[in-house]
Amino acid sequence: MYEFSGQKIFVAGHRGMVGAALVRRLEHENVELLTASSGDLDLRDQAEVRRWMEKNKPQAIFLAAAKVGGIAANDRFPADFLYDNLMIEANVIHAAHEFGVEKLLLLGSTCIYPKLSPQPIPEEALLTGPLEPTNEWYAIAKIAGIKLCQAYRRQHGSDFIAAQPTNLYGPGDNFDLETSHVLPALMRKAHDAKRKNAPSMTVWGSGAPLREFMHVDDLADALVFLMQTYSGEMHVNCGTGEEVSIQALAEAIKAVVDYDGELVFDASKPDGTPRKLADSSRLHALGWSHAISLQEGLADTYRWFLESEPDALRFV
Ligand code: GDP
Image (cartoon, rainbow, N blue to C red; front, top):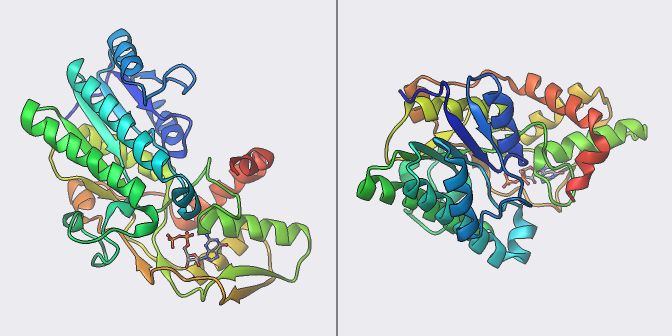
């Protein structure tokens, strides 16, 4: 058990969706929270990271800072995805070792797994086959991050762990229709269709693919749980274990938005992989499971969207 009470905890990447959820979650703990904006601390700069770590001396770190984005962004900026993420991880993990950080948790994503992984995807699938080429820049960097945690544990006994969340959603999500994932995209489409009194809204593909969605506040809770209770070389998947079809998701979103038009399925758009589910049995066996149902989570996300609509559209 790693005791949080009274500790100085650094959330790297507190402006991101996961980092912001961690800050909300840690406000309920008796900890001294450290954050740094990218203007004050460029995590890609080794000397800056060393100086900051020496001055602030965190005892534990959630490494949630990363360059993230969808297919289009990965395709346009492969160098940024690989270089930025490698540098952030190498600098923070090495400085954590140098300055005696007691515990570090690295955030990844289930897109690190091979394209043709068994479903649900177990942690052991890592490095067993070729990656999905559209996000391999990000995935290679994140795999290197997991390996850094393992290597520092083996060589120096550092208590560094890694967690791989499934598809996340919630406050702070990206609602831009061109670059967002399906959940915020459908929420925004339902919202716009309702506002315009449109008779229907479009759903890409057949609606048949199955996906798993986790509210980011559930993830933050799981990460705090892992930080306090888990120590090991094996990275840990974080998901709900529940799947929903895209059609069922679209219906649930219509209900939350209170839009009663038709769903039109656009077969010219790709379905992508038929099923994508993380095997979270390791996390569940450790004693954690999610608390926020999809319906509650959608309602919470829609509330956030309505409160911050102009901002939500800023992430383009
Ligand atoms: P994936 O999980 O990596 O495939 O990424 P997405 O979240 O972008 O897409 C998941 C599924 O939702 C795919 O089958 C998409 O075709 C489907 N989908 C339906 N409507 C939309 C939409 O408006 N935007 C996106 N991004 N996906 C959609």
